[in-house]
Image (tube, rainbow, N blue to C red):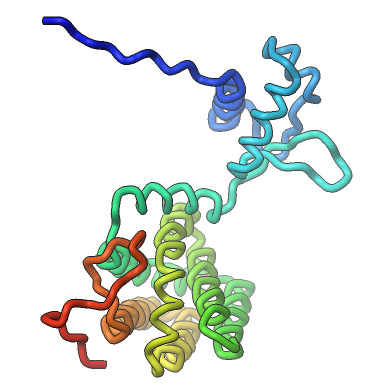
Length: 256
């Protein structure tokens, strides 16, 4: 049998430099707040051109692993925010053809326990953030602004949980929810009022450290999202990449 082999891909040198730096970061040899050596020194140590080092640093800057402090030209190791992490996972989920149903199920499993944990662990600053996000939803002038602040409310709950793993885990789901939520709010007249009411009850539960009520209201909040999407005619079997098409005639919308 004659076997055919594909050529071995040669990784660009800047990617190898970036990989070496990432290895130092994740193993703790480089920690958050540490400055990297100047570009010329890095080029000397890696045995590459300065332009190669600059490209590697640019890639890690985009990934949220490196940054610059004001007034300094040297790169410093930073902690990537949930948005950076979530964006990468979101792209992967879109490529895996996740559906609106998949996103709803993920939110149903993750968000109610997260809300309960937030009620148990919240601090005064967390309550202020939740109030600010909820007030911004109520004051929003259009669907786009409403969605931005709804997502901020969910993120504030994630921070209040005190569990960074959960806060990061919810981020890609929130990023997938955001564009379709805007379409739903624009089509369902009562959606905004129900969101405001649910957030008010959630905030009260978190403030009073009532974890059971927080979990119950978050579960109801997610179910309301599902009803809203059905009323808006979004097919739950559509992939998020499709953006949602009207549901088929044999799939009537659920009653509010």
